[in-house]
Image (cartoon, rainbow, N blue to C red; front, side, top):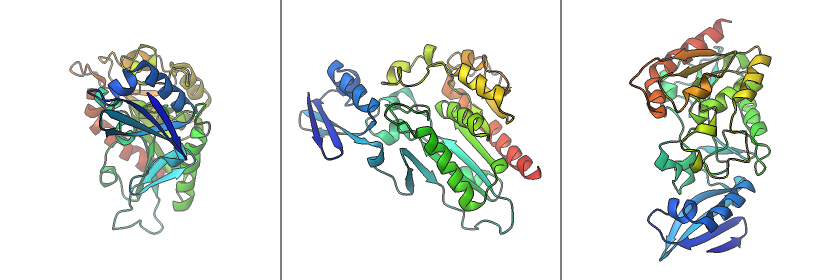
Length: 308
């Protein structure tokens, strides 16, 4: 294994294996230790390149993470404001903001070498077309650690939570959107983040089957470098926040789903919508099946917020 440093870029070179990420980093003890050290120090594995019989794992600081068209950066956070519809915003009408928090995809995507595939899955690509008029959609991307830090601060990204708050506040100020007309949403990891920041910052939220306790989570070993960076059991903190804030949100879950339900069942002071569907035994099935409930709640809550 070799480690090359040039300007802001750090490259870890390992022998070619069947899967560049799984075998080249997660399956290589020395490379894994280097990966954990780099990510904990604020670097992001952004891509893997094959050069002959070697794989080059390329790391850069948060501020140098490559952006897709339309992406912007707030400190250590990458975000995207969906294009305003061609019909524009109605002058004088109330405006709404839906903030989405990215989630992790299938287990295979946890091992993706490209950071956008590993961290950048944003819910509902056409969300704006399904919401009440004059609604903007702000998408936040969790680029921290290996597959995200649940949008929490870490040693290598100490301003992550402040960056979330700042970008939401700036979009609200730019488009004159009231706090009461702002709604946070996420699924899985993103649901936990929507709940955490909603309770912390005083925004309404919808949390679609959040993973709130990682201590028993089957895929935790794939969330490399996470264990000593955030609390793996987030239920006590969420309950403290929910007890202290007057704002409410809705948690969507399914008590037949063992991946997520035990932690959710320990949440207090929140509204819970139980799908109660015995055919949904797998966490990703729940987040997809909840789509009609999510969209119905979003539009109801946005209209309700206007009426207040």
